[in-house]
Image (cartoon, rainbow, N blue to C red; front, side, top):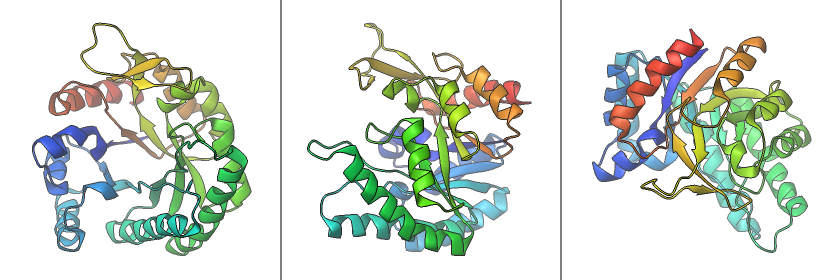
Length: 277
């Protein structure tokens, strides 16, 4: 397995310290990483930044493990869904320029008055249109188990199967399954043949002494993000499952804890390397 870090791990740093993509790449290089995961939300001026980022990637010997698009297909108005589709298509084009072969995509957000079957139809329709561009570019659209609308493994698998294209696969987020009441290791067993990208993170139940709010689950329980192997996600078991399944793609650290990521991420990487080596 190859290890990368998602720029989302530095979400607070981006806004507190005005980090650019280049700042993130400088940090990644200092950690002796092979890969980085970039997101569409962090460009300040993509037209001017992209050439510089490509030069930095080449200089540092870094591969873009995935390019993340922050889309939402669960919208009632067709024009709004078309805007989201355009966002994904533009993400495919950007990923191609960056040399990435995976574009992480979302399904959409849970909204009152929109039943799952109706929203699923919109998601499938949009993915069928987007994957035509992805297949031409030889890039996977990797659906993440994100949010409450289609966050369970059986829902992700159902959507992938209904699109019926080998270029629509799964971004397996190890932590998010807890938020929908699902055992992550059981979810891996269900999705293992679909996975082309992994978000590696950990959660534990929120304590009264925690200095931050947690991520609220479908049941109303709050979960706090922590460093890998400090929480309740069975990460050691999942790593073994990945090895048993012959998974040899990217495992991308997505740190969402409340500690300073400039300290927490290097420590997490050292621990991860010990488990996957």
